[in-house]
Length: 233
Image 1 (spheres, rainbow, N blue to C red):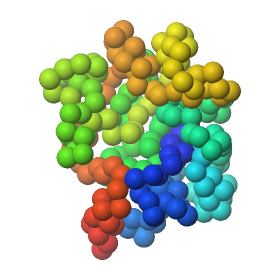
Image 2 (image 1 turned 45 degrees about the vertical axis):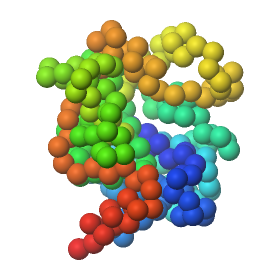
Image 3 (image 1 turned 120 degrees about the vertical axis):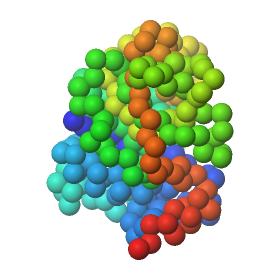
Image 4 (image 1 turned 90 degrees about the vertical axis):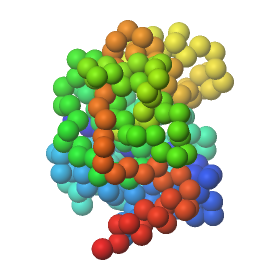
Protein backbone atom coordinates (compact mmCIF):
# COMPACT_ATOMS: atom_id res chain seq x y z
CA UNK A 1 0.00 0.00 0.00
CA UNK A 2 1.16 3.53 -0.85
CA UNK A 3 0.23 6.69 1.02
CA UNK A 4 -0.40 10.38 0.50
CA UNK A 5 0.26 12.96 3.21
CA UNK A 6 -1.49 16.28 2.66
CA UNK A 7 1.11 18.92 3.49
CA UNK A 8 0.43 21.74 1.02
CA UNK A 9 -1.63 24.02 3.26
CA UNK A 10 -0.58 27.63 3.77
CA UNK A 11 -0.87 27.44 7.56
CA UNK A 12 -2.36 30.91 7.80
CA UNK A 13 -4.06 30.31 11.17
CA UNK A 14 -0.72 29.22 12.64
CA UNK A 15 1.11 32.50 12.01
CA UNK A 16 3.72 33.48 13.10
CA UNK A 17 4.88 29.87 13.64
CA UNK A 18 4.41 29.05 9.97
CA UNK A 19 6.21 32.14 8.66
CA UNK A 20 9.34 30.03 8.33
CA UNK A 21 8.11 26.46 8.93
CA UNK A 22 5.28 24.59 7.14
CA UNK A 23 2.64 23.42 9.61
CA UNK A 24 3.36 19.66 9.19
CA UNK A 25 6.98 20.34 10.18
CA UNK A 26 6.05 22.05 13.44
CA UNK A 27 7.10 19.91 16.38
CA UNK A 28 5.01 18.24 19.08
CA UNK A 29 6.46 15.78 21.53
CA UNK A 30 9.96 16.40 20.22
CA UNK A 31 9.41 15.68 16.52
CA UNK A 32 7.57 17.18 13.53
CA UNK A 33 3.91 16.32 13.15
CA UNK A 34 4.56 14.67 9.80
CA UNK A 35 7.22 12.40 11.30
CA UNK A 36 4.65 10.85 13.62
CA UNK A 37 2.79 9.77 10.47
CA UNK A 38 5.89 8.58 8.64
CA UNK A 39 6.85 6.37 11.56
CA UNK A 40 3.39 4.79 11.62
CA UNK A 41 3.40 4.27 7.87
CA UNK A 42 6.83 2.64 8.02
CA UNK A 43 5.66 0.29 10.78
CA UNK A 44 2.70 -0.64 8.59
CA UNK A 45 5.02 -1.58 5.74
CA UNK A 46 4.27 1.37 3.47
CA UNK A 47 7.26 1.86 1.20
CA UNK A 48 6.20 4.80 -0.99
CA UNK A 49 4.71 8.04 0.29
CA UNK A 50 3.67 11.13 -1.65
CA UNK A 51 3.97 14.42 0.24
CA UNK A 52 2.17 17.22 -1.55
CA UNK A 53 3.73 20.63 -0.94
CA UNK A 54 3.23 24.32 -1.64
CA UNK A 55 4.09 26.80 1.14
CA UNK A 56 7.82 26.64 1.95
CA UNK A 57 8.03 23.47 -0.12
CA UNK A 58 11.82 23.37 0.00
CA UNK A 59 11.73 22.79 3.74
CA UNK A 60 10.29 19.29 3.38
CA UNK A 61 13.19 17.58 1.58
CA UNK A 62 15.58 19.52 3.81
CA UNK A 63 13.93 18.05 6.91
CA UNK A 64 12.85 14.62 5.67
CA UNK A 65 15.29 13.71 2.93
CA UNK A 66 14.36 10.90 0.57
CA UNK A 67 12.63 8.81 3.23
CA UNK A 68 15.41 6.24 3.51
CA UNK A 69 15.73 6.74 7.26
CA UNK A 70 12.25 5.16 7.56
CA UNK A 71 12.90 2.53 4.91
CA UNK A 72 10.64 4.22 2.36
CA UNK A 73 10.76 6.44 -0.70
CA UNK A 74 9.31 9.93 -0.44
CA UNK A 75 7.87 11.63 -3.52
CA UNK A 76 7.42 15.39 -3.25
CA UNK A 77 4.49 16.67 -5.30
CA UNK A 78 4.92 20.44 -5.61
CA UNK A 79 1.63 22.18 -6.41
CA UNK A 80 2.86 25.72 -6.97
CA UNK A 81 2.28 28.77 -4.81
CA UNK A 82 -1.46 28.03 -4.61
CA UNK A 83 -2.32 24.56 -3.26
CA UNK A 84 -4.58 22.36 -5.38
CA UNK A 85 -6.97 21.63 -2.46
CA UNK A 86 -7.69 18.06 -1.35
CA UNK A 87 -9.35 16.89 -4.56
CA UNK A 88 -6.85 18.42 -6.94
CA UNK A 89 -3.94 17.33 -4.77
CA UNK A 90 -5.10 13.73 -4.69
CA UNK A 91 -5.83 13.68 -8.42
CA UNK A 92 -2.37 15.12 -9.12
CA UNK A 93 -0.77 12.34 -7.05
CA UNK A 94 -2.68 9.46 -8.66
CA UNK A 95 0.03 8.67 -11.26
CA UNK A 96 2.30 7.73 -8.33
CA UNK A 97 -0.36 6.24 -6.06
CA UNK A 98 -1.76 3.95 -8.76
CA UNK A 99 -5.02 2.01 -8.94
CA UNK A 100 -4.67 -0.03 -5.75
CA UNK A 101 -6.19 1.33 -2.52
CA UNK A 102 -3.96 3.98 -0.94
CA UNK A 103 -3.86 5.55 2.49
CA UNK A 104 -4.18 9.29 3.07
CA UNK A 105 -3.59 11.40 6.16
CA UNK A 106 -3.60 15.12 6.81
CA UNK A 107 -0.16 16.37 7.75
CA UNK A 108 -1.53 18.71 10.41
CA UNK A 109 -3.31 16.21 12.66
CA UNK A 110 -1.96 14.11 15.53
CA UNK A 111 -3.63 10.90 16.68
CA UNK A 112 -3.05 7.64 18.46
CA UNK A 113 -5.14 5.86 15.81
CA UNK A 114 -3.58 2.56 14.74
CA UNK A 115 -3.10 2.66 10.96
CA UNK A 116 -3.10 -1.15 10.99
CA UNK A 117 -6.88 -0.98 11.51
CA UNK A 118 -7.33 0.48 8.04
CA UNK A 119 -8.43 -1.95 5.30
CA UNK A 120 -5.79 -3.07 2.80
CA UNK A 121 -8.44 -4.06 0.27
CA UNK A 122 -11.50 -1.98 -0.52
CA UNK A 123 -14.61 -2.89 -2.50
CA UNK A 124 -16.01 0.62 -2.12
CA UNK A 125 -14.39 3.86 -3.22
CA UNK A 126 -13.41 5.28 0.16
CA UNK A 127 -13.01 4.28 3.81
CA UNK A 128 -13.02 7.24 6.20
CA UNK A 129 -12.00 7.46 9.84
CA UNK A 130 -14.19 9.63 12.08
CA UNK A 131 -13.78 11.16 15.54
CA UNK A 132 -16.13 12.83 17.98
CA UNK A 133 -16.81 16.44 17.03
CA UNK A 134 -14.22 18.79 18.56
CA UNK A 135 -15.21 22.18 20.00
CA UNK A 136 -14.04 24.00 16.87
CA UNK A 137 -16.21 21.80 14.61
CA UNK A 138 -19.37 20.95 16.58
CA UNK A 139 -21.55 20.22 13.56
CA UNK A 140 -19.44 17.36 12.25
CA UNK A 141 -19.08 16.31 8.61
CA UNK A 142 -20.89 13.08 7.73
CA UNK A 143 -23.22 10.51 9.23
CA UNK A 144 -21.68 7.11 10.04
CA UNK A 145 -24.33 4.35 10.03
CA UNK A 146 -24.27 1.33 12.32
CA UNK A 147 -23.39 -0.92 9.36
CA UNK A 148 -20.34 1.24 8.51
CA UNK A 149 -21.94 3.02 5.56
CA UNK A 150 -21.36 6.77 5.43
CA UNK A 151 -24.09 9.22 4.43
CA UNK A 152 -23.79 12.91 3.67
CA UNK A 153 -26.79 13.83 5.80
CA UNK A 154 -27.98 12.74 9.21
CA UNK A 155 -28.67 13.85 12.76
CA UNK A 156 -25.56 12.31 14.35
CA UNK A 157 -22.71 13.61 12.22
CA UNK A 158 -19.12 12.89 13.19
CA UNK A 159 -15.96 14.72 12.16
CA UNK A 160 -13.71 13.33 9.45
CA UNK A 161 -10.34 12.72 11.06
CA UNK A 162 -8.30 13.40 7.93
CA UNK A 163 -7.40 9.70 7.69
CA UNK A 164 -8.72 7.39 5.03
CA UNK A 165 -8.21 4.79 2.35
CA UNK A 166 -9.23 5.63 -1.21
CA UNK A 167 -9.43 4.09 -4.66
CA UNK A 168 -8.77 5.98 -7.87
CA UNK A 169 -12.29 5.01 -8.98
CA UNK A 170 -13.58 7.86 -6.80
CA UNK A 171 -12.40 10.26 -9.52
CA UNK A 172 -14.32 8.71 -12.40
CA UNK A 173 -16.40 11.49 -13.95
CA UNK A 174 -14.98 14.05 -11.55
CA UNK A 175 -15.35 16.99 -13.95
CA UNK A 176 -19.10 16.49 -14.23
CA UNK A 177 -19.43 16.21 -10.46
CA UNK A 178 -17.26 19.22 -9.63
CA UNK A 179 -18.73 21.47 -12.30
CA UNK A 180 -17.34 24.87 -13.25
CA UNK A 181 -15.89 25.94 -9.93
CA UNK A 182 -12.92 28.28 -9.93
CA UNK A 183 -9.68 26.37 -10.36
CA UNK A 184 -10.80 23.41 -12.48
CA UNK A 185 -9.51 25.14 -15.60
CA UNK A 186 -5.98 25.05 -14.22
CA UNK A 187 -3.39 22.46 -15.19
CA UNK A 188 -3.33 20.57 -12.90
CA UNK A 189 -6.88 21.40 -11.73
CA UNK A 190 -7.69 22.79 -8.29
CA UNK A 191 -10.81 21.58 -6.45
CA UNK A 192 -12.04 20.22 -3.14
CA UNK A 193 -12.65 16.52 -2.44
CA UNK A 194 -16.00 16.62 -0.53
CA UNK A 195 -18.23 16.90 -3.65
CA UNK A 196 -16.76 13.64 -4.94
CA UNK A 197 -17.27 11.99 -1.56
CA UNK A 198 -20.87 13.17 -1.33
CA UNK A 199 -21.55 11.81 -4.81
CA UNK A 200 -19.99 8.48 -3.83
CA UNK A 201 -22.04 8.40 -0.61
CA UNK A 202 -25.20 8.80 -2.67
CA UNK A 203 -24.39 5.54 -4.47
CA UNK A 204 -23.38 3.72 -1.27
CA UNK A 205 -19.68 3.70 -2.12
CA UNK A 206 -18.22 5.12 1.12
CA UNK A 207 -17.67 3.25 4.37
CA UNK A 208 -16.14 4.36 7.65
CA UNK A 209 -15.13 3.67 11.23
CA UNK A 210 -15.22 5.64 14.49
CA UNK A 211 -11.95 6.24 16.33
CA UNK A 212 -12.61 6.74 20.04
CA UNK A 213 -9.04 7.55 21.03
CA UNK A 214 -6.92 10.68 20.92
CA UNK A 215 -7.00 13.05 17.96
CA UNK A 216 -6.03 16.69 17.50
CA UNK A 217 -6.47 18.99 14.55
CA UNK A 218 -3.44 21.22 15.05
CA UNK A 219 -5.10 24.34 13.66
CA UNK A 220 -3.92 27.00 16.10
CA UNK A 221 -0.74 27.74 18.08
CA UNK A 222 -2.69 27.09 21.28
CA UNK A 223 -3.72 23.58 20.19
CA UNK A 224 -0.15 22.84 19.16
CA UNK A 225 1.11 23.98 22.58
CA UNK A 226 -1.51 21.86 24.36
CA UNK A 227 -0.60 18.81 22.26
CA UNK A 228 3.10 19.32 22.86
CA UNK A 229 2.57 19.55 26.62
CA UNK A 230 0.49 16.36 26.60
CA UNK A 231 3.22 14.42 24.79
CA UNK A 232 6.07 15.43 27.06
CA UNK A 233 7.09 12.43 29.15
